[in-house]
Image (cartoon, rainbow, N blue to C red; front, side, top):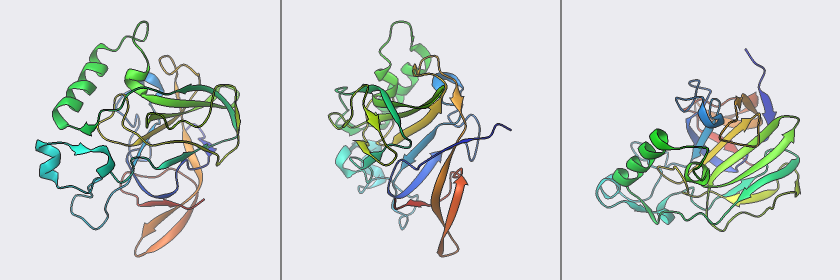
Length: 227
């Protein structure tokens, strides 16, 4: 087994990772676009049945869609997971104003089937995104950011824990979330995914928070990082 690269958790507060290499590899069902060991992070209401990621009712989601500001994680701050240099900071890609099960599914299907890296804009997949060079042939990609939220520019040096942007719903996104991955190239269209663990976070089990060191969250874990 490849030893994972350890970085800092890129968010603060409580989170759920519905797609994670802690449960399956490849975590997103494909090795393309560097996603082999990628994570998705959302916030949910732990006290509601089904753990919804939004304040509205499931019926509203199915029939009308949900405005982005009804999602718990939309607009939440994202932090640099490592010391490094920003090599990409793509902003200005418009977010859809609300989620819609039918149109978001069609968008995902179209991108999965017809995306051509030779001619298509990578933002149609990654949305607004930041890529940080963390080390030799190690790049951290943080995708689907809120339009206008990116705080860094290409060539800028960042330190672990710096505020760099906010969670959004841009690109190939079913709902507001952070897509996070490590990869071996700054070009998402050709990159291979790299295994990644987080240097410290907490997991809620049996009524208590337990500290995890150099861990890989599973899809059912209630994760907390306070920074």
